[in-house]
Image 1 (cartoon, rainbow, N blue to C red):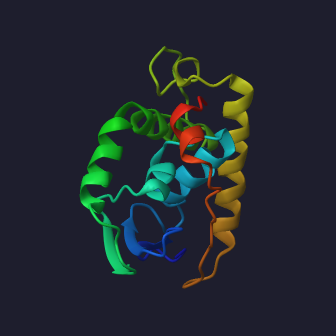
Image 2 (cartoon, rainbow, N blue to C red; image 1 turned 45 degrees about the vertical axis):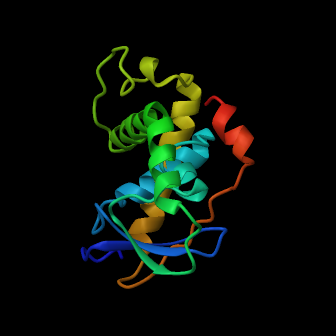
Image 3 (cartoon, rainbow, N blue to C red; image 1 turned 90 degrees about the vertical axis):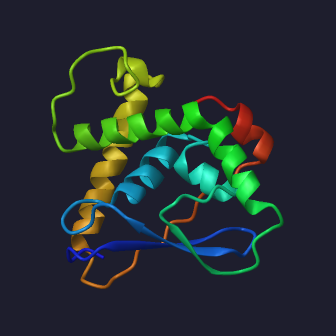
Length: 166
């Protein structure tokens, strides 16, 4: 919701399980979870936050709403998060980087994951992600109070998600 109330994301996975996820941001700022969706899609990051959710990860901010959870869902979620720790950290860093650049914040040169050089993506690809965030920010600003925004995560085969590099 674009009116400074907390943002709640309704997540419906391909297996029919639905979660509600309360997120950071909102008001005038693009919600953090939406920044991730925009950046991860723009950069083709298959194993970041949203790729993990699509594959069965359940974050602490997610509340089960409906649908039958698969057997051993908790173990699968824990395993995915453990296996993808580095990919998740990279997705966090690059989403933060694109968000800061979209707001015009200065980004100091460096080699860490939170820098352009350390992101693992060519500067032109980071520019694409920044443009996507700016476009999303404009769209977010135009939403009326109580309006919704639907995002469909482009599903990729599990094997491609595990092996594909950004």
